[in-house]
Image 1 (cartoon, rainbow, N blue to C red):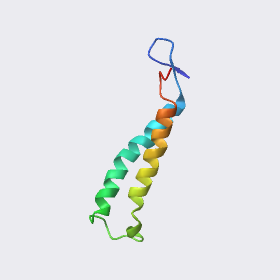
Image 2: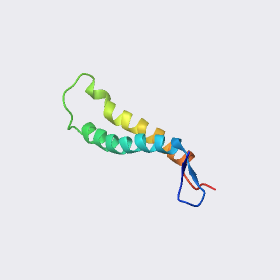
Image 3: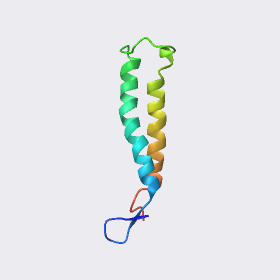
Image 4: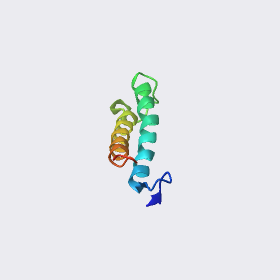
Length: 74
């Protein structure tokens, strides 16, 4: 583990593993909602709104890891 803020705290790699899907989810989920409101390209199975669902899944997955392994959680 890497050093934290210089106060002897340690950062878990799993925190950073959670940050990346959280950021992707924060980008994909609103865009998926935008597509679901009728602004989507006519692709195969577009009525299932995969961008919205994958964005939500990544958002939940990332949030779980960020909260679970956040630095300084006592």
